[in-house]
Length: 222
Length: 222
DNA sequence: CCATAAAATAAGTGATTACTCACTATACAA
DNA sequence: TTGTATAGTGAGTAATCACTTATTTTATGG
Image (tube, rainbow over all chains, first blue to last red; front, side, top):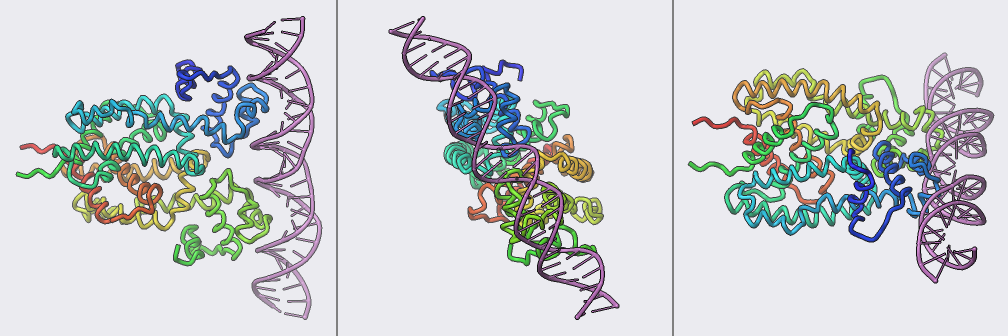
């Protein structure tokens, strides 16, 4: 995290374009909470430790967040929207506008775009992944955003390339799963399992794109 | 879980071939612990709730397990060995004995074998996935078993098929990641994300195998 | 039936938990 | 300066935590 933390928080919490302002101590609380939650998990983190790490009285936390869970949600919920934002933006119709003539061009664009995002918000993503299974509110958000919007959008895109004969004619959701499994598998390996290994990202991505595209290519009729 | 629970526990904990015996209450403790851990996560689970659900006094738990963490490890640790067992068994050399002539035959065998396992031990697998990030002991076991043994073994297998010209000549670890991403992605979608959806497993597996094999096929020179 | 050990229990233990509340400090407009 | 709202504090709260211990129940073999 080389960039100023305040800016990072602003961006994540979507506050720079609203009239809401965070005090200095509030920022320190969020910063400390992210650290502690990411390290020990939500349930094993104590508000006293967060307060201590933030250099703040424990009561101050509850001035701004009604409960400990409130603190968690205020960190993690905005990430969910941002995580899937690019799939919902209007200019994502580039795909259908044939800006990405080939499925592999589309793939490269998505991968690079989301890699930037993952690198920037890694600790919060970690928290999100860990806590979703235990918090129904987060599960609903996930269902609504990811299952609801992204899947539908992605399905249209896949069907577009299927009509063009670039992708084999199998259920779109299977295509999505195969594509997403590889991209997420790469990110997880790259940033969670073996982040210290030396990585040639571009080469790895190219191999992956080739793998996906050829795996999804229709049978050659000749 | 249709089968008798005691048998399931015996099999998991590897106790049927040793002279260690579990009392009736011990089995109930493990059963309750698996349920509670899987539902709320280790840190958010209390020994009192486990005891209550097991129909046992809280002290009984600590008769058999020194600490709460001890209880967790006694459930989760043996799973890790079992999870990767087939990759270490001697008869896994079938591959190198050319029992599986093609990579896709090998894939099908692995997928079916591990699907059985996943279905049977789903709750404990859930616990394992959730807790590994927070317990160094589990991380070390994972590193030693998975990274150490399975990866090495798998690498040999991949190189075998590469020499035969069935798999494109790229780093074996990339081949492994692409293969594993898809298999795990399928299992996670199948059993965790959308277990209630109707699944045609065989069809889905065949599509996946086709995808992997064609994605990894060498360039056609003609 | 008795003796002995293991199993199980109920009632604690101090420590820690998330959260409250009465109070003080600070900022800013009138 | 004074008034008012917000930010921040820290001592306190009851509840719950993992774990202990003294005692009782159960199982087992002779």
